[in-house]
Amino acid sequence: MATSQPFIDSNLRRCHDLLNMANLFLAQNKLASAGSAIGALRATSALLSSKDADFFRGRLIALDQEHVRRGGSHIKNNKIVDLSAYRRGRLEQRSMASSTMGLKALYGGNRSARPATAEDDRGNFIYRMPMSLNEVSTSDSLGMENLFQIWQQAQRSMGRPQSIPLLSDMDPKMIADIGMLGFVHVIDVSSENPENFNVQVYGSRVTFYNGQNLSGLKIGSFPIPIYRESVATDYNTVRMTGVPAYHRVIATVDGSRRHYTRLLLPFSTDGNRPDRLLVGVRTDNWLPE
Image: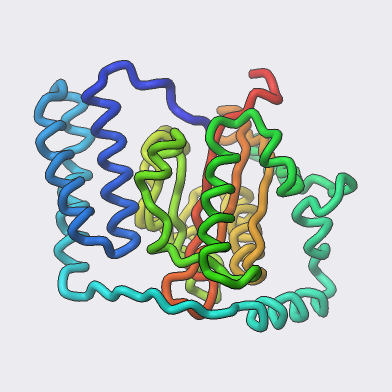
């Protein structure tokens, strides 16, 4: 998964920022803020070239439809719930499963963690190296450390060390301030079946499958089996444990080689369980092209 080239045109850059801001506000059910971002996107996209304007025209239609659909069903939930018992039960379940590696090995609790690899007969290849969360602070992936710090601050504000932050507490404007707007996804992981995890927001500055926007797709709909299986495994583990995860990934997909760092952060919308993931993705300078 590679990130797109820097945007030169200021109006185009602003449109991408507004698109991602509107999607994040909708994911949080902050309808008034989403409406303002959609209106600003509509006005700014009118200043673009016809080719660029076409890109946003379809997305504006989808934004308007989602905004209308969510209207009248806005629920504000500031309930604080200690999820330690929930996660403890999930951890006990995983420790009993003979087919799993163990969380410390899987998520880089120490430097002896082993990478997971997969390949197919079509030349596709996935390499995922679990990294310690302590290494996020030493990453040269722009904005990743700041994104993790925002999650940690949101967790501390809950008043309990092991609580899962509410998605509604994540301010998209803070994501913009650290340069990560457009490089984050929101994944609905409320289903017990990982293949039914839904891409609620797909960062517009992340390119994959020839630049296809994956918003609205289920993980099970991803066209490359080894990729969807690896994503489903990593997402599901964070859902079950409520523990963030950090990976370095090398992938050859449809003949295109990508390398990036990926940070998976668990959030809750109902105050009862981790049911959303915020996924930060940035290319890294640790591996040459």
